[in-house]
Length: 240
Image (cartoon, rainbow, N blue to C red; front, side):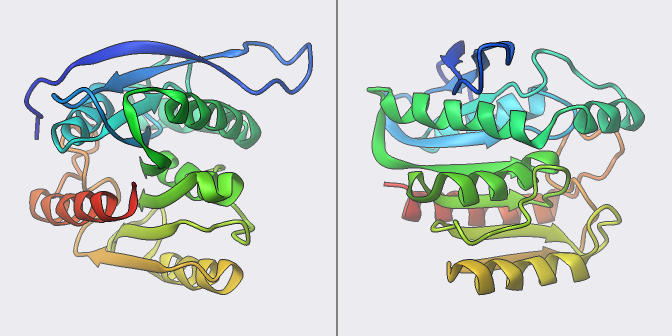
C-alpha cells in the first residue's frame, strides 16, 4: 500500500566513534515528515533487501500518521535483488556495526527540532525486526516502543535485560525463517529478562507478510493491514 506523498529527504548523521581506524563515521538514511512538520520520532529498520522503496513507503505512511520517520541505510546504498544476495549482504553486516549506525540515528533524530517526543519508537522488518530488539536492549530509556515484524538475523540480542521499552511483535505462523515456537520462546525470554511489557501477535501468514513488494511473494494483505493498524495505534500511544 503506497502512502500519500509526504515531505521527505535523504539525510546524513554522525556515528559514534569506535576508534580512529573504524572507517566511515557518517550514516545515511531516508527521512519523512508529517504535513505539520513536527511529530514523535520513529526509527524504521530495513529488511535484508536494503533501503528499498517498500521501507521508504513505510516511512511515508508513518509520516502520514503524524510521525517523523527515519530509515537508516545499513547497507550503504547497496540493494539486493534475490534471496541469496540479500542473505549474503545481511551476514556481511556485523551486528556491532548495525548497532552503531542505529545508535547514531537515534541520537540524531532526538536532537531534531521536528521531533516532539522525548523518546523514539522503533519498527523493523525481517533483519530490521532483529535489530529493533537489539536497539531496545542497548538504548534503554531512549526507546519507549519497539515493534519487530518477524525479526531474524544477527541483530537479535541474546540479552534482553536492558529493555525498558514496551514491545509489540508481529509474527507469521507459517514463518520458516523464524518458526512460531521460537517466537513464543523469545516473547517469554524478553519478559523474563527485562520485566518489560511484551505482546506478540501471530498471523496465518508466512515470513515477510507485510511487504507488498516482496520478491518472494509472501505478502498477505489482510494480515499486513491488521498488523499495521495495531502497530500504528501502539506507537501513537507509547511514543511521546
